[in-house]
Amino acid sequence: MGGTRASCKPLECFILFLLLLNCVICSKRPHELGQTGSNPTRSKSNQHGWNWNLLMNNTGVVAMHMAVTHHNKVVIFDQTNAGPSQYRLRKCKARGGSRESSCYAHSVEYNIVKNKVRALHLATDTWCSSGSFLSNGTLLQTGGNGSGSKKIRYYKPCQNNGCDWMESKKEMFVRRWYASSLSLPKENSVIVVGGQSAFSYEFVPKTSSKPYDLPFLHRTFERNSKGNNLYPILHLSNNGHLFIFANRDSILFDYKKRKVVKNFPKIPGNGARSYPSTGSSVILPLDYNDNFGKVEVMVCGGAARGSYTAAQRRRYLTGLRSCGRMVITGNRHKWRMENMPGPRIMSDMLVLPTGDILIINGAKRGCAGWGTASDPALEPYLYKPDNGPGKRFQTLKKTKIARLYHSSAVLLPDGRILVAGGNPNNRYIMHGVTHPTELRLQALTPDYMDPQFDDLRPKDVMVIYPRKAHGVENGRIFNVTFGLTNDSGNLSVVAYAPPFTTHSLSMNQRMLRLECLGLESGGGQDRVQASVVAPPSIYVAPPGFYMLTVVNGGVPSRSSWLRIL
Image (cartoon, rainbow, N blue to C red; front, side, top):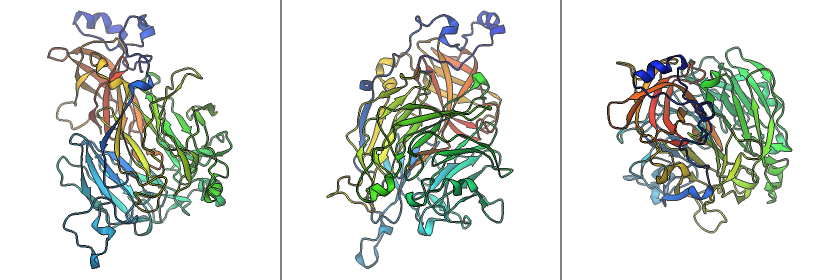
């Protein structure tokens, strides 16, 4: 991808037949076609092509948590016990004339098209909670602190302004503060793992009469470092097993049989990667070219050993520069290490339609927590997985806004990256501190969105399901139509599961390179139709809504929504 790798492959035995029918075939990799120097493709990324834009001066609410819904809106929310936010609710009378936090919004919905927010209502505290999308697009949100620590909440997105948070009468077994969650494809439920003083996991909806103990969490716990295994990293492998990473260790876990399938080697480095050391992680794009058989995880950054204790004395140790990649499928497992351009903690990692990885937000010294980090990491990094060693990282244009503790970032359907939040204070403090509460909303626009690439950019992407269907089943063929002015000879179709982001975790994030069988005329000028194959398994592509993007010569289209049933 990005001009070096394609995902659409022709049916070679039918090439002559299709050409006689005046069909255009989806391209192979350029080197397979012998056209590496002849096809128009976007030149390699440069930092000056990436631009920062200020969207709003005041979202009203800190973006501790963010998630993009399939109605092109972003749910943003904070904790409820940090005092009054900057968004006062209408028709609310504070008791005794005091500034009650209940008269202020702690969640908003951001309309991407209108660039506006509207208030949402949270009943209980969502501080350091977790979330996952269900197959119908509903956000299932779990845990928090205090009154919210066992709560289960739902946000069902809608076209109009009539949707809001709903809270279930049922609760989880134990308090889940700093826990992680992952959507389970077959059960259409969520597994919630860990949390402060919670060395267990459970399912929502419940499937048992008690939570299940997870010895792995006991083993990775560091008493003097506030755990260093909170917010464990969770990824779904292609066989339905869970990759669970905490501190520096990781396992492959069969949650159905409640047993560890594999113990992976410890990631090298003198430090930890889980909260409050807080590194970040992604699964690299899964690819139809190997039948989605290779699953590779990447973990970047974290805090040096002793950072939490040192930060209590206002001494901020330099964070970790290293990233590790490991293939979790097959029988040979080894972390392949490389260094980022600089140290990072509390960063977000997002997979872009090109297959590149964006590392953004965070700090260079200290660890996660209130006032426990310094030296904001203002420069995003771009990581190109398919490049050779030493040629994968690139430093992008820096922002002027520090995004420290309780900040987040998400990929939007229009291709921009939405960046918000930042509050290393235990209240909304706007003045008199080194890093005030941050309510400005930004967008980082990638270089491939520059107008100079508009001739390559596929336009007006539309997903067409089989007749009378409301989505596509795994392994089935569906159609995608789009405008194509300049065929680069390097065309691919990708599907992206948008994550729930908080505390440097992008829960359930997933990028899939799909098989494209061929292109034919779409019935209009410069309009074509691609026949695309949905991924073969619910474990490769769990049911739900995905952003579908057509990438031509390294230039992505705006995304359209695809529902996998």
